[in-house]
Image (cartoon, rainbow over the protein chains, first blue to last red):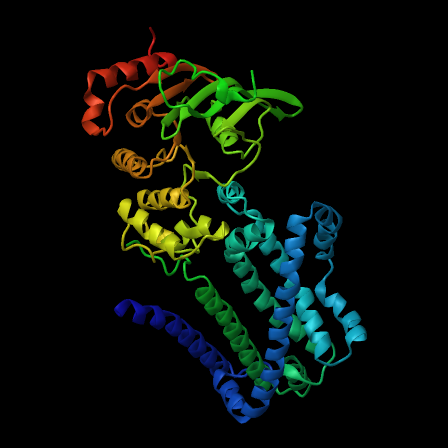
Length: 255
Length: 270
Protein backbone atom coordinates (compact mmCIF):
# COMPACT_ATOMS: atom_id res chain seq x y z
CA UNK A 1 0.00 0.00 0.00
CA UNK A 2 2.66 2.42 1.10
CA UNK A 3 4.89 1.26 -1.74
CA UNK A 4 2.19 1.95 -4.30
CA UNK A 5 1.65 5.39 -2.85
CA UNK A 6 5.33 6.22 -3.09
CA UNK A 7 5.51 4.95 -6.65
CA UNK A 8 2.80 7.40 -7.56
CA UNK A 9 4.01 10.18 -5.28
CA UNK A 10 7.59 10.56 -6.54
CA UNK A 11 6.85 10.99 -10.26
CA UNK A 12 4.08 13.49 -9.47
CA UNK A 13 6.38 15.37 -7.13
CA UNK A 14 8.97 15.49 -9.93
CA UNK A 15 6.44 17.00 -12.33
CA UNK A 16 5.34 19.51 -9.68
CA UNK A 17 8.92 20.67 -9.12
CA UNK A 18 9.44 21.26 -12.84
CA UNK A 19 6.14 23.16 -13.12
CA UNK A 20 6.93 25.37 -10.14
CA UNK A 21 10.44 26.10 -11.46
CA UNK A 22 8.96 26.91 -14.87
CA UNK A 23 6.37 29.20 -13.32
CA UNK A 24 8.86 31.18 -11.26
CA UNK A 25 11.34 31.37 -14.11
CA UNK A 26 8.71 33.02 -16.32
CA UNK A 27 7.38 35.31 -13.59
CA UNK A 28 10.68 36.41 -12.03
CA UNK A 29 12.52 36.96 -15.31
CA UNK A 30 9.42 38.48 -16.93
CA UNK A 31 9.70 36.27 -19.99
CA UNK A 32 7.39 37.46 -22.74
CA UNK A 33 4.37 35.24 -23.29
CA UNK A 34 5.20 34.80 -26.98
CA UNK A 35 8.61 33.45 -26.09
CA UNK A 36 7.54 31.17 -23.26
CA UNK A 37 4.13 31.16 -21.58
CA UNK A 38 3.98 30.06 -17.95
CA UNK A 39 2.25 26.82 -16.98
CA UNK A 40 -0.80 28.72 -15.74
CA UNK A 41 -1.20 30.47 -19.08
CA UNK A 42 -0.90 27.13 -20.88
CA UNK A 43 -3.53 25.66 -18.56
CA UNK A 44 -5.72 28.70 -19.14
CA UNK A 45 -5.39 28.23 -22.90
CA UNK A 46 -6.27 24.55 -22.54
CA UNK A 47 -9.47 25.46 -20.70
CA UNK A 48 -10.48 28.15 -23.22
CA UNK A 49 -9.75 25.97 -26.21
CA UNK A 50 -10.93 22.64 -24.80
CA UNK A 51 -13.33 21.94 -27.64
CA UNK A 52 -10.97 22.62 -30.51
CA UNK A 53 -8.13 20.76 -28.74
CA UNK A 54 -10.31 17.68 -28.25
CA UNK A 55 -11.65 17.78 -31.80
CA UNK A 56 -8.18 18.03 -33.30
CA UNK A 57 -6.86 15.42 -30.88
CA UNK A 58 -9.55 13.04 -32.11
CA UNK A 59 -8.43 13.51 -35.71
CA UNK A 60 -4.79 12.96 -34.79
CA UNK A 61 -5.59 9.90 -32.66
CA UNK A 62 -7.41 8.27 -35.54
CA UNK A 63 -4.44 8.94 -37.80
CA UNK A 64 -2.10 7.43 -35.21
CA UNK A 65 -4.26 4.38 -34.55
CA UNK A 66 -4.84 3.58 -38.20
CA UNK A 67 -1.22 4.26 -39.06
CA UNK A 68 -0.10 2.00 -36.22
CA UNK A 69 -2.55 -0.71 -37.31
CA UNK A 70 -1.17 -0.47 -40.85
CA UNK A 71 2.40 -0.74 -39.57
CA UNK A 72 1.50 -3.87 -37.58
CA UNK A 73 -0.76 -5.37 -40.21
CA UNK A 74 1.80 -5.03 -42.97
CA UNK A 75 5.01 -5.20 -40.92
CA UNK A 76 4.29 -8.56 -39.26
CA UNK A 77 3.50 -10.43 -42.51
CA UNK A 78 6.61 -8.91 -44.10
CA UNK A 79 8.67 -10.21 -41.17
CA UNK A 80 7.08 -13.65 -41.52
CA UNK A 81 7.90 -13.83 -45.22
CA UNK A 82 11.46 -12.55 -44.63
CA UNK A 83 11.97 -15.19 -41.95
CA UNK A 84 10.63 -18.19 -43.81
CA UNK A 85 11.63 -17.44 -47.38
CA UNK A 86 15.37 -17.31 -47.81
CA UNK A 87 15.00 -15.93 -51.32
CA UNK A 88 12.68 -13.11 -50.24
CA UNK A 89 15.08 -12.36 -47.44
CA UNK A 90 18.08 -12.17 -49.75
CA UNK A 91 16.22 -10.09 -52.29
CA UNK A 92 14.45 -7.55 -50.11
CA UNK A 93 16.02 -7.41 -46.67
CA UNK A 94 19.07 -5.35 -47.74
CA UNK A 95 16.73 -3.02 -49.62
CA UNK A 96 14.51 -2.68 -46.57
CA UNK A 97 17.46 -1.83 -44.34
CA UNK A 98 18.91 0.59 -46.90
CA UNK A 99 15.55 2.33 -47.25
CA UNK A 100 15.81 3.29 -43.60
CA UNK A 101 18.68 5.65 -44.40
CA UNK A 102 16.20 7.90 -46.20
CA UNK A 103 15.06 10.63 -43.80
CA UNK A 104 11.37 9.90 -43.40
CA UNK A 105 10.44 13.59 -43.32
CA UNK A 106 11.85 13.95 -46.82
CA UNK A 107 9.32 11.44 -48.10
CA UNK A 108 6.38 13.41 -46.74
CA UNK A 109 5.96 15.77 -49.75
CA UNK A 110 5.89 12.76 -52.09
CA UNK A 111 3.24 11.09 -49.95
CA UNK A 112 1.27 14.33 -50.07
CA UNK A 113 1.33 14.23 -53.86
CA UNK A 114 0.27 10.59 -53.90
CA UNK A 115 -2.39 10.62 -51.22
CA UNK A 116 -3.62 14.24 -51.04
CA UNK A 117 -4.22 16.37 -47.99
CA UNK A 118 -6.76 14.01 -46.44
CA UNK A 119 -6.20 11.43 -43.74
CA UNK A 120 -4.56 9.01 -46.23
CA UNK A 121 -1.27 10.90 -46.46
CA UNK A 122 -1.02 10.98 -42.64
CA UNK A 123 -1.63 7.25 -42.44
CA UNK A 124 1.02 6.71 -45.08
CA UNK A 125 3.47 8.89 -43.15
CA UNK A 126 2.70 7.14 -39.84
CA UNK A 127 3.08 3.78 -41.54
CA UNK A 128 6.36 4.64 -43.26
CA UNK A 129 7.93 5.81 -40.04
CA UNK A 130 6.53 3.07 -37.77
CA UNK A 131 6.68 -0.17 -39.71
CA UNK A 132 10.44 -0.83 -39.71
CA UNK A 133 10.80 -1.61 -36.01
CA UNK A 134 7.79 -3.92 -36.29
CA UNK A 135 9.48 -5.89 -39.07
CA UNK A 136 12.84 -6.08 -37.31
CA UNK A 137 11.47 -7.02 -33.89
CA UNK A 138 9.01 -9.57 -35.26
CA UNK A 139 11.72 -11.20 -37.36
CA UNK A 140 14.04 -11.29 -34.34
CA UNK A 141 11.28 -12.87 -32.26
CA UNK A 142 10.49 -15.50 -34.86
CA UNK A 143 14.15 -16.40 -35.21
CA UNK A 144 14.69 -16.69 -31.46
CA UNK A 145 12.31 -19.62 -31.01
CA UNK A 146 13.96 -22.22 -28.79
CA UNK A 147 15.59 -24.89 -30.99
CA UNK A 148 14.49 -27.56 -28.53
CA UNK A 149 10.85 -26.56 -28.94
CA UNK A 150 11.30 -26.82 -32.70
CA UNK A 151 12.85 -30.23 -32.22
CA UNK A 152 9.88 -31.25 -30.08
CA UNK A 153 7.58 -30.07 -32.86
CA UNK A 154 9.57 -32.10 -35.35
CA UNK A 155 9.47 -35.23 -33.23
CA UNK A 156 5.69 -34.86 -33.00
CA UNK A 157 5.55 -34.30 -36.76
CA UNK A 158 3.83 -30.93 -36.42
CA UNK A 159 2.85 -29.39 -39.74
CA UNK A 160 4.50 -26.10 -40.72
CA UNK A 161 1.32 -24.23 -39.85
CA UNK A 162 1.04 -25.92 -36.47
CA UNK A 163 4.68 -25.15 -35.74
CA UNK A 164 4.14 -21.53 -36.73
CA UNK A 165 0.93 -20.82 -34.86
CA UNK A 166 1.51 -22.99 -31.82
CA UNK A 167 5.22 -22.40 -31.27
CA UNK A 168 6.92 -19.70 -33.32
CA UNK A 169 4.31 -16.96 -33.23
CA UNK A 170 3.70 -17.16 -29.46
CA UNK A 171 7.48 -17.34 -28.94
CA UNK A 172 7.78 -14.12 -30.93
CA UNK A 173 5.02 -12.27 -29.06
CA UNK A 174 7.29 -10.54 -26.52
CA UNK A 175 9.45 -9.19 -29.37
CA UNK A 176 6.39 -8.24 -31.41
CA UNK A 177 5.17 -6.20 -28.47
CA UNK A 178 8.48 -4.45 -28.00
CA UNK A 179 8.27 -3.53 -31.69
CA UNK A 180 4.68 -2.38 -31.20
CA UNK A 181 5.67 -0.10 -28.34
CA UNK A 182 8.25 1.65 -30.50
CA UNK A 183 5.86 1.72 -33.48
CA UNK A 184 3.05 3.37 -31.57
CA UNK A 185 5.21 6.30 -30.47
CA UNK A 186 6.64 6.62 -33.98
CA UNK A 187 3.11 6.58 -35.43
CA UNK A 188 2.34 9.74 -33.43
CA UNK A 189 5.45 11.41 -34.84
CA UNK A 190 4.48 10.28 -38.35
CA UNK A 191 0.95 11.61 -38.04
CA UNK A 192 2.18 15.00 -36.83
CA UNK A 193 4.75 15.26 -39.62
CA UNK A 194 1.96 14.44 -42.05
CA UNK A 195 -0.15 17.22 -40.60
CA UNK A 196 2.76 19.68 -40.74
CA UNK A 197 3.33 19.04 -44.43
CA UNK A 198 -0.20 19.48 -45.60
CA UNK A 199 -3.41 19.43 -43.65
CA UNK A 200 -6.16 21.62 -42.31
CA UNK A 201 -6.91 19.32 -39.40
CA UNK A 202 -5.27 17.70 -36.41
CA UNK A 203 -3.12 18.79 -33.51
CA UNK A 204 -0.11 19.28 -35.76
CA UNK A 205 -2.07 21.68 -37.89
CA UNK A 206 -3.47 23.47 -34.84
CA UNK A 207 0.04 23.82 -33.46
CA UNK A 208 1.33 25.33 -36.71
CA UNK A 209 -1.61 27.69 -37.03
CA UNK A 210 -1.32 28.87 -33.42
CA UNK A 211 2.40 29.38 -33.91
CA UNK A 212 1.86 31.55 -36.97
CA UNK A 213 -0.61 33.66 -34.97
CA UNK A 214 1.96 33.97 -32.15
CA UNK A 215 -0.57 32.28 -29.87
CA UNK A 216 2.19 30.51 -27.96
CA UNK A 217 0.00 29.32 -25.06
CA UNK A 218 -2.11 27.37 -27.58
CA UNK A 219 1.05 25.94 -29.16
CA UNK A 220 2.06 24.64 -25.75
CA UNK A 221 -1.46 23.44 -25.03
CA UNK A 222 -1.38 21.44 -28.28
CA UNK A 223 1.97 20.00 -27.27
CA UNK A 224 0.59 18.92 -23.90
CA UNK A 225 -2.41 17.24 -25.53
CA UNK A 226 -0.12 15.59 -28.07
CA UNK A 227 2.10 14.12 -25.38
CA UNK A 228 -0.93 12.91 -23.43
CA UNK A 229 -2.17 11.28 -26.63
CA UNK A 230 1.19 9.55 -27.07
CA UNK A 231 1.12 8.28 -23.50
CA UNK A 232 -2.43 6.99 -23.78
CA UNK A 233 -1.65 5.09 -26.99
CA UNK A 234 1.52 3.66 -25.45
CA UNK A 235 -0.46 2.66 -22.37
CA UNK A 236 -3.01 0.91 -24.58
CA UNK A 237 -0.26 -1.23 -26.15
CA UNK A 238 1.12 -2.07 -22.70
CA UNK A 239 -2.38 -3.02 -21.59
CA UNK A 240 -2.88 -5.20 -24.67
CA UNK A 241 0.43 -6.87 -23.88
CA UNK A 242 -0.70 -7.64 -20.33
CA UNK A 243 -3.98 -9.09 -21.60
CA UNK A 244 -2.52 -11.13 -24.47
CA UNK A 245 0.51 -12.31 -22.53
CA UNK A 246 -0.80 -13.19 -19.08
CA UNK A 247 2.27 -15.37 -18.57
CA UNK A 248 4.53 -12.33 -18.90
CA UNK A 249 7.28 -11.47 -16.47
CA UNK A 250 5.17 -8.99 -14.55
CA UNK A 251 2.39 -11.37 -13.60
CA UNK A 252 4.71 -14.16 -12.55
CA UNK A 253 5.49 -15.05 -8.96
CA UNK A 254 6.93 -18.31 -7.71
CA UNK A 255 4.35 -20.49 -6.03
CA UNK B 1 23.84 -57.93 -42.04
CA UNK B 2 20.34 -58.93 -42.97
CA UNK B 3 17.84 -56.07 -43.01
CA UNK B 4 15.17 -58.34 -41.64
CA UNK B 5 16.91 -58.45 -38.32
CA UNK B 6 14.20 -60.14 -36.31
CA UNK B 7 15.28 -63.58 -37.45
CA UNK B 8 18.71 -63.02 -35.93
CA UNK B 9 19.44 -64.53 -32.54
CA UNK B 10 19.32 -62.13 -29.64
CA UNK B 11 23.02 -61.26 -29.68
CA UNK B 12 23.76 -63.40 -26.63
CA UNK B 13 21.67 -61.29 -24.27
CA UNK B 14 20.47 -64.47 -22.63
CA UNK B 15 16.91 -63.29 -22.58
CA UNK B 16 13.73 -64.82 -23.92
CA UNK B 17 12.39 -61.43 -24.96
CA UNK B 18 13.25 -60.44 -28.53
CA UNK B 19 15.01 -57.14 -29.13
CA UNK B 20 12.63 -54.23 -29.51
CA UNK B 21 15.08 -51.78 -30.98
CA UNK B 22 18.56 -52.10 -32.34
CA UNK B 23 21.38 -50.11 -33.85
CA UNK B 24 23.77 -51.82 -36.22
CA UNK B 25 27.04 -50.10 -37.09
CA UNK B 26 25.40 -46.68 -36.88
CA UNK B 27 27.72 -43.92 -38.02
CA UNK B 28 27.38 -40.17 -38.17
CA UNK B 29 29.76 -37.78 -39.85
CA UNK B 30 29.26 -34.03 -39.78
CA UNK B 31 30.66 -31.63 -42.35
CA UNK B 32 32.50 -28.75 -40.74
CA UNK B 33 34.09 -26.31 -43.16
CA UNK B 34 34.25 -28.96 -45.88
CA UNK B 35 36.02 -31.36 -43.53
CA UNK B 36 34.21 -34.56 -42.53
CA UNK B 37 34.20 -34.84 -38.74
CA UNK B 38 33.19 -38.26 -37.41
CA UNK B 39 30.81 -37.90 -34.44
CA UNK B 40 29.56 -41.45 -34.06
CA UNK B 41 31.39 -44.52 -35.32
CA UNK B 42 30.00 -48.03 -35.74
CA UNK B 43 27.69 -48.03 -32.76
CA UNK B 44 25.79 -51.29 -32.35
CA UNK B 45 23.44 -51.98 -29.48
CA UNK B 46 20.05 -53.43 -28.84
CA UNK B 47 17.36 -53.23 -26.21
CA UNK B 48 14.13 -54.96 -25.35
CA UNK B 49 10.70 -53.55 -24.74
CA UNK B 50 10.52 -51.98 -21.31
CA UNK B 51 14.29 -51.68 -20.96
CA UNK B 52 15.91 -48.64 -19.48
CA UNK B 53 19.32 -48.20 -21.04
CA UNK B 54 21.82 -45.44 -20.49
CA UNK B 55 24.30 -43.95 -22.89
CA UNK B 56 27.11 -42.78 -20.63
CA UNK B 57 30.01 -40.72 -21.83
CA UNK B 58 31.95 -37.48 -21.53
CA UNK B 59 30.34 -34.21 -22.61
CA UNK B 60 30.35 -33.70 -26.36
CA UNK B 61 31.23 -37.31 -27.13
CA UNK B 62 28.37 -37.80 -29.55
CA UNK B 63 25.92 -39.70 -27.35
CA UNK B 64 23.28 -37.04 -27.88
CA UNK B 65 23.76 -37.51 -31.63
CA UNK B 66 23.03 -41.22 -31.18
CA UNK B 67 19.89 -40.34 -29.24
CA UNK B 68 18.69 -37.89 -31.88
CA UNK B 69 19.23 -40.45 -34.62
CA UNK B 70 17.17 -42.92 -32.60
CA UNK B 71 14.35 -40.39 -32.54
CA UNK B 72 14.63 -39.87 -36.29
CA UNK B 73 15.49 -36.23 -35.66
CA UNK B 74 18.74 -36.34 -37.63
CA UNK B 75 19.66 -38.75 -40.42
CA UNK B 76 22.44 -41.29 -40.03
CA UNK B 77 25.47 -41.36 -42.29
CA UNK B 78 25.51 -45.13 -42.30
CA UNK B 79 24.29 -48.22 -40.52
CA UNK B 80 20.87 -49.45 -39.54
CA UNK B 81 18.41 -48.22 -36.91
CA UNK B 82 15.38 -50.29 -36.14
CA UNK B 83 12.49 -50.01 -33.77
CA UNK B 84 9.87 -52.71 -33.49
CA UNK B 85 11.07 -54.26 -36.75
CA UNK B 86 10.80 -51.01 -38.71
CA UNK B 87 13.72 -48.93 -39.90
CA UNK B 88 13.85 -45.41 -38.44
CA UNK B 89 14.21 -42.94 -41.28
CA UNK B 90 12.59 -39.83 -39.85
CA UNK B 91 10.46 -38.56 -36.97
CA UNK B 92 7.75 -40.98 -35.90
CA UNK B 93 4.80 -40.49 -33.57
CA UNK B 94 5.74 -43.09 -30.97
CA UNK B 95 8.58 -41.09 -29.50
CA UNK B 96 8.75 -38.89 -26.42
CA UNK B 97 11.65 -36.54 -25.83
CA UNK B 98 12.96 -34.81 -22.72
CA UNK B 99 15.77 -32.28 -23.05
CA UNK B 100 18.30 -31.00 -20.57
CA UNK B 101 16.30 -27.79 -20.17
CA UNK B 102 12.57 -28.16 -19.51
CA UNK B 103 11.78 -26.14 -22.70
CA UNK B 104 8.17 -25.60 -21.74
CA UNK B 105 6.04 -23.09 -23.57
CA UNK B 106 5.85 -20.12 -21.23
CA UNK B 107 2.50 -19.06 -22.70
CA UNK B 108 0.79 -22.31 -21.79
CA UNK B 109 -0.29 -23.49 -18.39
CA UNK B 110 1.18 -26.68 -16.96
CA UNK B 111 -1.82 -28.62 -18.22
CA UNK B 112 -1.62 -26.96 -21.63
CA UNK B 113 2.04 -27.90 -21.92
CA UNK B 114 1.40 -31.52 -20.97
CA UNK B 115 -1.47 -31.76 -23.45
CA UNK B 116 0.52 -30.22 -26.31
CA UNK B 117 1.44 -33.55 -27.98
CA UNK B 118 -2.17 -34.74 -27.79
CA UNK B 119 -3.31 -31.50 -29.38
CA UNK B 120 -0.87 -31.87 -32.26
CA UNK B 121 -1.76 -35.53 -32.72
CA UNK B 122 -5.46 -34.62 -32.76
CA UNK B 123 -6.22 -36.67 -29.66
CA UNK B 124 -6.96 -33.90 -27.19
CA UNK B 125 -10.15 -35.39 -25.78
CA UNK B 126 -11.50 -35.92 -22.30
CA UNK B 127 -9.52 -39.12 -21.92
CA UNK B 128 -6.32 -37.23 -22.67
CA UNK B 129 -7.17 -34.65 -20.02
CA UNK B 130 -7.83 -37.35 -17.47
CA UNK B 131 -4.50 -38.97 -18.27
CA UNK B 132 -2.77 -35.60 -17.99
CA UNK B 133 -4.21 -35.14 -14.52
CA UNK B 134 -3.17 -38.67 -13.58
CA UNK B 135 0.43 -38.33 -14.64
CA UNK B 136 0.71 -34.85 -13.14
CA UNK B 137 -0.42 -36.41 -9.89
CA UNK B 138 2.10 -39.22 -10.36
CA UNK B 139 4.94 -36.68 -10.53
CA UNK B 140 3.57 -34.75 -7.56
CA UNK B 141 2.20 -31.77 -9.43
CA UNK B 142 -1.50 -32.21 -8.66
CA UNK B 143 -2.95 -28.76 -8.05
CA UNK B 144 -0.47 -27.00 -10.34
CA UNK B 145 -2.39 -27.63 -13.56
CA UNK B 146 -3.24 -23.98 -14.13
CA UNK B 147 0.12 -22.53 -13.09
CA UNK B 148 2.44 -21.04 -15.68
CA UNK B 149 5.92 -22.57 -16.07
CA UNK B 150 7.49 -19.30 -14.88
CA UNK B 151 5.91 -19.87 -11.50
CA UNK B 152 7.55 -23.27 -11.01
CA UNK B 153 11.03 -24.24 -9.85
CA UNK B 154 13.47 -25.90 -12.25
CA UNK B 155 12.77 -29.37 -10.87
CA UNK B 156 9.02 -28.88 -11.13
CA UNK B 157 9.37 -27.63 -14.70
CA UNK B 158 11.36 -30.72 -15.62
CA UNK B 159 8.57 -32.88 -14.14
CA UNK B 160 6.12 -31.11 -16.42
CA UNK B 161 8.44 -31.81 -19.36
CA UNK B 162 8.50 -35.47 -18.32
CA UNK B 163 4.70 -35.57 -18.29
CA UNK B 164 4.60 -33.94 -21.72
CA UNK B 165 6.96 -36.63 -23.01
CA UNK B 166 4.83 -39.55 -21.83
CA UNK B 167 1.28 -38.20 -22.29
CA UNK B 168 0.90 -39.82 -25.72
CA UNK B 169 2.21 -43.17 -24.45
CA UNK B 170 5.28 -43.22 -26.69
CA UNK B 171 6.84 -46.58 -27.46
CA UNK B 172 10.23 -45.10 -26.71
CA UNK B 173 11.22 -42.29 -24.38
CA UNK B 174 14.42 -40.42 -25.27
CA UNK B 175 15.99 -38.44 -22.46
CA UNK B 176 18.95 -36.16 -23.15
CA UNK B 177 20.69 -35.42 -19.85
CA UNK B 178 17.31 -34.48 -18.43
CA UNK B 179 18.48 -33.96 -14.86
CA UNK B 180 21.90 -32.52 -15.66
CA UNK B 181 20.87 -28.97 -14.84
CA UNK B 182 19.31 -29.80 -11.48
CA UNK B 183 20.95 -29.70 -8.08
CA UNK B 184 22.13 -33.01 -6.64
CA UNK B 185 19.25 -33.61 -4.24
CA UNK B 186 16.58 -32.78 -6.80
CA UNK B 187 18.39 -35.02 -9.21
CA UNK B 188 18.25 -38.01 -6.85
CA UNK B 189 14.56 -37.35 -6.34
CA UNK B 190 13.98 -37.19 -10.10
CA UNK B 191 15.87 -40.47 -10.56
CA UNK B 192 13.42 -42.23 -8.26
CA UNK B 193 10.53 -40.48 -9.97
CA UNK B 194 11.71 -41.73 -13.37
CA UNK B 195 11.90 -45.29 -12.04
CA UNK B 196 8.37 -44.90 -10.67
CA UNK B 197 7.09 -43.65 -13.99
CA UNK B 198 8.79 -46.46 -15.81
CA UNK B 199 7.30 -49.02 -13.40
CA UNK B 200 3.80 -47.60 -13.87
CA UNK B 201 3.92 -47.00 -17.64
CA UNK B 202 6.30 -49.77 -18.73
CA UNK B 203 8.02 -47.25 -20.99
CA UNK B 204 11.18 -48.11 -22.88
CA UNK B 205 13.71 -45.46 -21.95
CA UNK B 206 16.96 -44.39 -23.59
CA UNK B 207 18.76 -42.16 -21.12
CA UNK B 208 21.77 -40.03 -21.99
CA UNK B 209 23.90 -38.88 -19.07
CA UNK B 210 27.44 -38.08 -18.05
CA UNK B 211 26.89 -39.12 -14.46
CA UNK B 212 28.26 -42.60 -13.79
CA UNK B 213 26.19 -43.28 -10.71
CA UNK B 214 22.99 -41.95 -12.27
CA UNK B 215 23.46 -44.24 -15.26
CA UNK B 216 24.00 -47.32 -13.10
CA UNK B 217 21.26 -46.44 -10.63
CA UNK B 218 18.62 -46.13 -13.32
CA UNK B 219 19.50 -48.66 -15.95
CA UNK B 220 19.13 -52.28 -16.91
CA UNK B 221 22.18 -51.77 -19.04
CA UNK B 222 24.75 -49.02 -19.46
CA UNK B 223 26.64 -48.35 -22.66
CA UNK B 224 29.83 -46.48 -21.91
CA UNK B 225 31.00 -44.28 -24.78
CA UNK B 226 34.53 -43.16 -25.47
CA UNK B 227 35.48 -39.63 -26.43
CA UNK B 228 34.47 -38.34 -29.85
CA UNK B 229 33.92 -40.04 -32.20
CA UNK B 230 31.48 -41.99 -30.08
CA UNK B 231 32.38 -45.67 -29.89
CA UNK B 232 30.95 -48.04 -27.32
CA UNK B 233 33.84 -48.77 -25.00
CA UNK B 234 31.99 -51.00 -22.55
CA UNK B 235 28.58 -52.52 -22.04
CA UNK B 236 27.57 -53.03 -18.43
CA UNK B 237 24.72 -55.23 -17.29
CA UNK B 238 23.35 -53.89 -14.05
CA UNK B 239 22.19 -57.03 -12.26
CA UNK B 240 20.57 -55.23 -9.38
CA UNK B 241 16.89 -55.96 -9.00
CA UNK B 242 14.25 -53.25 -9.20
CA UNK B 243 12.71 -51.57 -7.30
CA UNK B 244 15.89 -49.77 -6.37
CA UNK B 245 16.23 -47.20 -3.67
CA UNK B 246 18.96 -44.75 -2.72
CA UNK B 247 20.32 -47.57 -0.50
CA UNK B 248 21.23 -49.35 -3.73
CA UNK B 249 24.02 -46.87 -4.29
CA UNK B 250 25.93 -48.32 -1.34
CA UNK B 251 25.80 -51.95 -2.51
CA UNK B 252 29.10 -53.60 -3.31
CA UNK B 253 27.92 -54.52 -6.83
CA UNK B 254 27.02 -50.90 -7.43
CA UNK B 255 30.44 -49.65 -6.42
CA UNK B 256 32.07 -52.33 -8.54
CA UNK B 257 30.05 -51.25 -11.60
CA UNK B 258 30.95 -47.63 -10.93
CA UNK B 259 34.59 -48.64 -10.87
CA UNK B 260 34.34 -50.51 -14.17
CA UNK B 261 32.60 -47.58 -15.83
CA UNK B 262 35.19 -45.17 -14.44
CA UNK B 263 37.99 -47.27 -15.87
CA UNK B 264 36.27 -47.45 -19.25
CA UNK B 265 35.85 -43.69 -19.22
CA UNK B 266 39.49 -43.25 -18.29
CA UNK B 267 38.80 -41.32 -15.10
CA UNK B 268 40.36 -44.12 -13.04
CA UNK B 269 43.70 -45.45 -14.22
CA UNK B 270 43.95 -49.22 -14.08
